[in-house]
Image 1 (cartoon, rainbow, N blue to C red):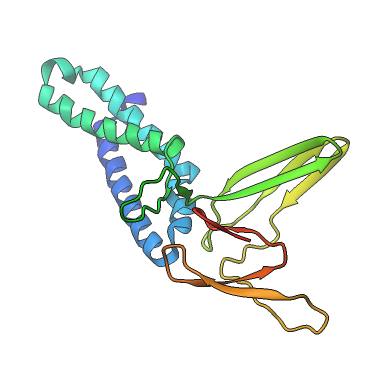
Image 2 (image 1 turned 135 degrees about the vertical axis):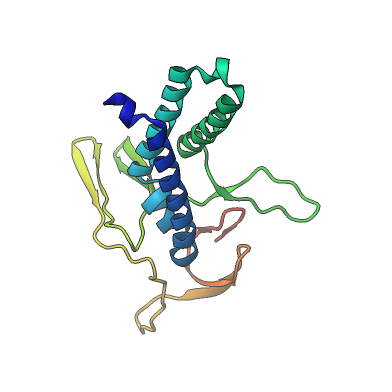
Length: 210
C-alpha cells in the first residue's frame, strides 16, 4: 500500500497537479488580486499538505532506490525537486513579502508587509490582552473569523459579520457633522483620496499623516 502511495507514478501526478495549481494561481492573482490567490492556493491548508506529500514521495524514493550511490544523475534530478519543495515549505512558514520604497540615492531598512493584519488590544484597568492575526479573505472563499480575548474578568468575542472588499470612505454632508480635511495621497501607486478628522493619524508605511 505504502509503495503505491509513494511511488514515482504518484510523484509525476503530483508534479502535474502542482504545475496546474501554480498556473491557476497566476490567473487568479491577475484577475482577483494577490489576496484571493493566497486564500485559495498559496496559504491554503490543502497546499501545505500537498507540498508535504510531494516531499515525502521524493525522500522515500531516494532512500528506497539509493540513487545517491548507484545513479548520481537520477539522484541530482530528484534532489533538485526536493530542494524546490523544501524551499516552498520554508517560504510558506518563515518567508514574508512586502513593499520597500527606496528613493534614488537613498537607503532604507523599512518594508511594508503585504499581509493584512487584524490587531486588537483590549484593556481593563492595568490588564491588557492583545491579538494579532493575519487575514486571508477573498471574494471566492467563505470568509470566517472568530476569536476570543480574555482580560480580567471580561471576555471579548471578535467575529466577522461581512466581508466588503470594495467598500470605501465617503463623506456625507451633515449640518451637525464635523469638519474633515480631504487629501489625495500617493504611496507609490495611483493616488487615493483620504479624509482626516481632527486628531486622526493614518500610517502609510514609510510616513504618517496627522
